[in-house]
Image (cartoon, rainbow, N blue to C red; front, side, top):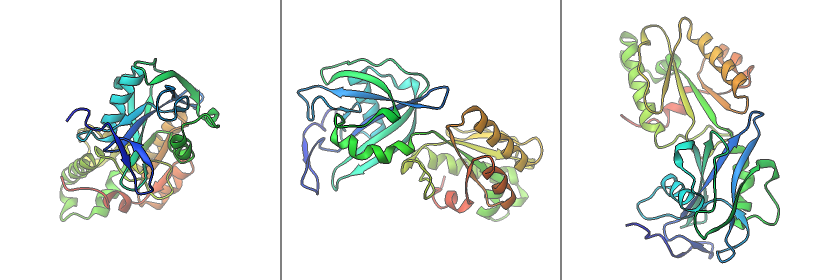
Length: 291
């Protein structure tokens, strides 16, 4: 039911929060040519809860909405911000026990124009991330910002398909490597559309939407991409193609985090030397859902 989320809710900590079904907000971030992140901030109307403070466009979720849908709706209503120029990177959840605020992190290709679109905003302003802080922040945002700040950079997950397929150990996979690669792509696609869980210690939100690139070689070539999985065909050795891809990403977008999924020790050594992080196939396979 539309707009059935408006109202006050009480969390397990005894605090009142706006949003019967929880709330979400949009953290739009743009990285300039030097890799400096700029965040779109909203100064709240004086009549609102914690009026005059700075935070994110956001508000109560309706019962039928997920965090991303609600945050994009609120950003349109409050800041006239269109979703077309945004790519969702992840969702950070601040759980208060029975009530939560979910911050949707989305990368903007440019400093998108944003203006107060209703009476809930005084001003909207793009600020360098390192300038955000102080007493003028909304208390909820001020509490979560130190945890969210390290998770702002976008990420690329590079899959060593041959190595992961071998670790998956499907019966008879070696007889039809193309079919095995297709099954892996489909399983990753099914899981990725709802978000991945990052490896422990990797600076990303718990619900994570990285760009995913699957590198295939040999008889697995000819695989089509999917909506959430890009496919790169190695012209020769797959390891060399992965190293070349990591080098290209690091040179063109040095602020972008790279995670290579492989168990191959020599490949892990090579990509780590280029600044990428690594995870074993078990990290990915442990969260794949059946297709």
